[in-house]
Length: 249
Ligand code: PXP
Image (cartoon, rainbow, N blue to C red; front, side):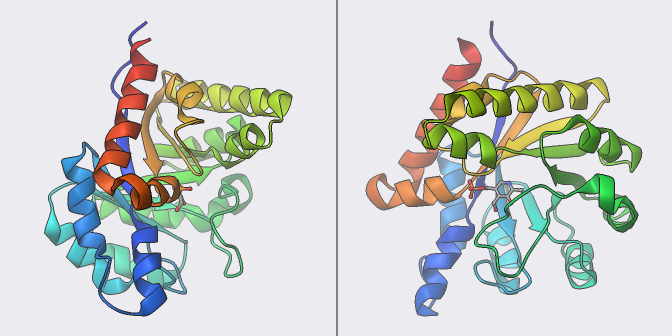
C-alpha cells in the first residue's frame, strides 16, 4: 500500500552544539539549514533552550533568513520563550518539556497534568499565526487532552521505541511501536495532525515511517552525527529515501 508523503523536518541544533564548543562562528547552522533544504528537507527545526546550549537567539533570524523552508521552533512553556516566539512568528512552534540538567528532551510534555499551563500558550501562539504542536508521549489520554486544549498538532515522542530497539529489547520495542500506532490513529480520529520524532536513526525509521497517520518526522542528532562521515546533504537524502521507501512498500 502506498502511504501519503510524510514531511521530514531536520533539526540542526547539534550543528550549533559543535559551533559552541569553540565559541566561534562555525559550523554555521544557517549553512546547515541550506544543505538540508537542498537534500530534500521540508522544514527546519530548532530548539531554543533556556540555557542556550545550542541554538542562540541570533540563530533564529539567521537560519530563517538564509532559506525559505518553514521553521519549527521548539520551546519550553516559559514567559521568556513566549515573548521570543511571539516576536519571531515561526511557521510552527512545538511545546516541549525542558529540564535544565537533562541532556536531551527526556519525555513528552504531560499535558494531562499541565493543561492549565499549556493551554494559554496554545491560544496565544495560534492567534499569533504559528501552528502549535505538543510534544507528548504516545498515549491516547495525552492526545485527548491535546485536542481539548485546541492544539492542531501533536508530536509523538519516539525515544523509548528507539532505545528498546537499540538495546535489542524486541518485546518492549513492539509494545512501544503499538503505543505509537494507537496514539497516531487516535490523533487522526480526533482531527489532529500527528508528527513524530526523537532519537530516530536509519535503523529505526522504517516501522514508524509505516504508520500511515504520521504526517511529519523531526530528526536531528543522528543526521548531524552521520554528516561527519558522509556530509549533511547525503545523510538527509538517505533518511528522506528511507521514509519514502517505507511508505511505498
Ligand atoms: N522532536 C522534538 C520535539 C525534539 O525535542 C527533538 C530533539 O530536540 C527532536 C524531535 C529530534 O530528536 P533527535 O535530535 O534525537 O533526532
